[in-house]
Image (tube, rainbow, N blue to C red; front, side):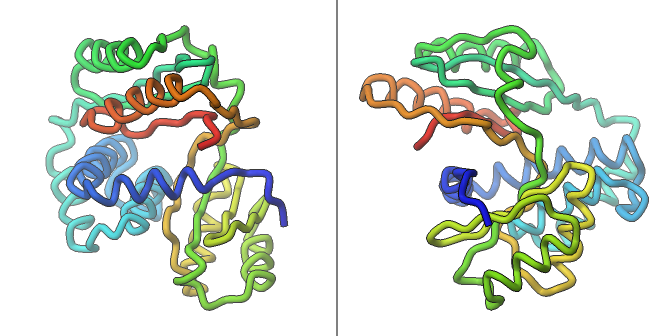
Length: 242
């Protein structure tokens, strides 16, 4: 087991999002629409759709809502005009930030993201300016309170399924995978009856940065809060050690 990945902030982020389920479901609905447009409505033959469904289930989206979303997207493929766009930049004290968005208006989204950075004393950079500080990984978070399996057994189940690493914190476990092997590991854990608090392909910082200046913390939190409230923003990754 390793403890190198600080994934507590991922959990805190999810808890904040739990107060805004409507936005999460809207985000996932857009992702379903794009996935269906790109690869069809069958998750068995569409890896991206299977990954979005896993994310939906981890966020407690009802199965009938997921199915309705897939059917709606399948019948409305020609009208799906969302596209993915990524922004990279720096927050206060050089904190690295990556913003993933799914939008039908890139000009609007770019302006909103730039405004968020500016209001928090940060700035948007060029593509690639901070992404080299992150590793793209499949990440599965398991709440200890919801998991009856012993840590060693859980670790072996994950590793046998192809996971790269297994971490343990006070209240949760983390399973890391290669992005290409994520769905296979997730499916193995699901079949083993292991409840997952979150399951998605994400960006994990190689190193974390602590902020001791209270003003910098407030400014960074302002950036994150504004981005979190933007309907176009799908995910925000950063290397702040909260």
